[in-house]
Image (tube, rainbow, N blue to C red; front, side, top):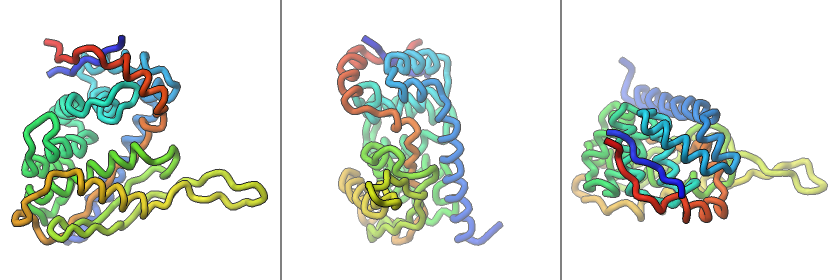
Amino acid sequence: MYTLNRPRGLPGLGARAAVACLFLAITVFASAASLSSDPIVVAVKHGACAKAVALANARVASGDNEATFLAARMLDEGICMQKDPVQAADYFTQAVDRGDQSAMLDYAAKLGLGIGTDQSYERAGDICRSAGFDPQRQLSPYSLGYACTVTGIASRLLRETLPKGAFHPGAIIVDFNPASGEMRIKTTPEVGRGDAPIGSSLRPPLIDAPREINKSWGDAVAAAPKPNGAQLDNRSVELTLDVDMTLEAGRNPTRDIQAGSRLMNGELYFPH
């Protein structure tokens, strides 16, 4: 049985928003490039779940931020272990406390959902602001927290359900009005393409990006706790969806489900 231990404890407004979203997209791209060579990710890609968990245990215990973030994602999405969103929230909390910006959107979603912590859109909004969302402060913390919760859920759903290579490196940027519920897709990464059918040189796109994004967004809105409409701002905000699948590319549902029955039977704890 393999056990993953818990970790220790002056441009215009429009221009500023565009620059902020571009910065977030670049951050996502840089993070993906860094994670692709991480030994934990490499182990997952090779189906070596026991090795991946052992590496995560050792590095999380030493205070490694990247490993803590990866352990949280593995727990949250059931990669090489059984899904445990509540325990994943502990890891995201520790990563954020150590200043890991990559974990902030995931942590904000946990706050907005009330998973592993008290539900609070205000606190989720504060975390999202720290991550670089809505730098022009168009939205109240409550509205931003609701928006970021939906964004975090939709990002996870896309990472979990899209096929490998669905998107080339990059990020999805959307406009969202919390009060009206209207979401508009602004930019997407280039869509990956499958093999050309016999007798054709045309490679079809792996996915219909707008359809997949809209579906995941709708599911995310349904999953988020219903907000107090009187507290939602009738203004749009640009948001970045994290669809980097560097870790998820190693997912093997059959293997992970089988491994999960062994990997997560132990009690998780914070070493003191």
